[in-house]
Length: 142
Image (tube, rainbow, N blue to C red; front, side):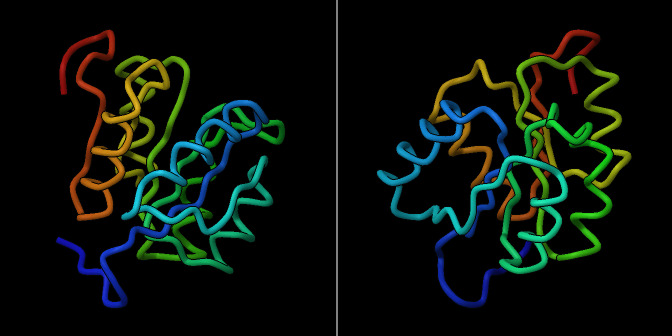
């Protein structure tokens, strides 16, 4: 289990290119006392830079970004901040996508169709060192 030395607040970097989704998530996180959004970016290159700058506990990473597939960026994000855990947050995925995330060093995958409480719970578990892959993915359970 990872221990955050500074406080119990989870430092989150949000990587989401759809403005409405990012705004909704930012608004939702404002009501949560144990998760702090330390940055919000819209593309992989911005995410790599922001990860190195902020060293977040968790990077909430959209899979489909304007400059590429977020899964392909997991290694670069981890190079910038080896202790940061990457949670892929996507509109659609199957077991093969989850396997790609795991193979790339990601800590989990969650579908956007879920409830806010599920997202918050998953962020907390990933920040605590657990891996968390959505069990309702087509192609078999994890």
